[in-house]
Length: 156
Image (cartoon, rainbow, N blue to C red; front, top):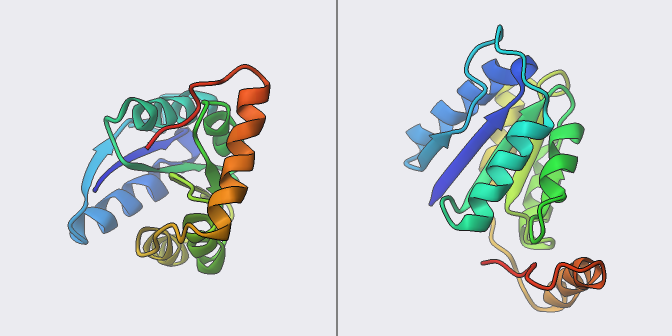
């Protein structure tokens, strides 16, 4: 699995920690930036970049980090077909993978520490979409996009 990473300048340290953690677990990782705390980047930019990379098929899933995880996930969720969930603990990370078929896990560097963030990533990447009754619900989310003109919203 190929995982893309993105963060704003406030979350570079946590992004780098998670990137290294998942590389050690054997995942192929792509860093889409931000690379330096001096490089001021607004969170919608890396959120969109990682989401679009998933949509194009360049990567399979993503990890996004900003101050709270909320802003960067909102940006990613604007890309048709993308589902990003903010997680502050491992249970929610497992559920967004199993029930919501999210492609992106988002976190807040000002909310979770490194060890908790690693557990969140592990829960997300160790879980798979269960399908079944959840398939219908994810389909209803896609239907909302279609109703607003995104008929090509289906991706992997």
